Image (cartoon, rainbow, N blue to C red; front, side, top):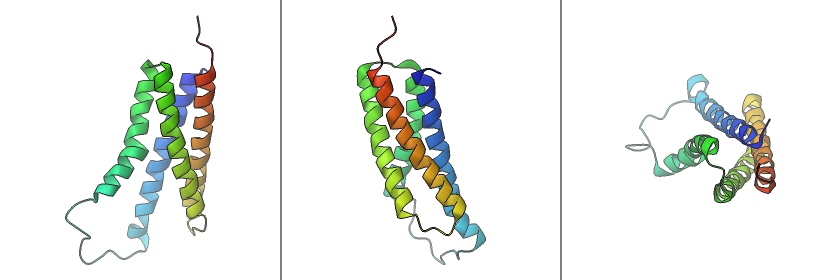
Length: 132
């Protein structure tokens, strides 16, 4: 399997992992947590939009871009984004380590692991000699 295909699959796994995490995070409201009597505000907080864009939209964009762009600059930008997401995912998995929800803990651990593997794959792609 070539570098680009591995990287695309890893980006997709990150999107899937963080999406499952978000769904499970909201499942508490369905199964056991009481809903607030009043909404917290008029709309979704801006910070949540930033998190969704960083954790879901940008990785999907990088799936598409990785299909067509192989420049060194793009590889470096991909590595920077993947490194930031890996730090976020690893620290979030450690932060939530005492969860009673075993499924959530497994998804967070998987996503953190996939993030680290993505960084390694991007480093290998960056160091690879271009095909002639």
